[in-house]
Image (cartoon, rainbow, N blue to C red; front, side):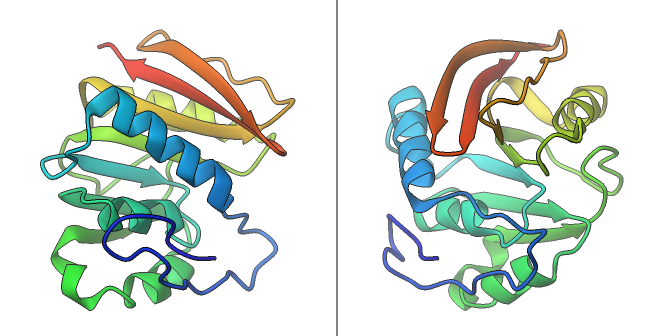
Length: 181
């Protein structure tokens, strides 16, 4: 695993030792950041990203490399994300780690411009986390949401989200949605 773009392009990350952690592929991450650039412009310097089910933290750390002002990595086990975040000592003020349940989001503060989530496949956790994010009002109106699920998995978006696009990358499907209320 490595950072694929931005200031730290090529920086190697620790690969997770647990089979329970399934990092988003480099190809899919590159495609998703292309989507973000097309939708948000090239300047991410004032944007905050929330990475739910962060696992290794690769997506959120990619966001730091590509210029996001702040990222918050949320997972029930933040050990892998913390190990990778430590590789970015000059960016420690931009990286927050929160050990917690993404379907409840207790202890999370702030309001985010972009949401990325890659929940364990086929457990219905994406819908629960989206509902919790809406209920806790942690997304700005119009926030872009990238929701990764297994390619044949259905994900019913709660009414607070509008589906904009859907893309497939290998075994994954990414839903692009907008938080509308």
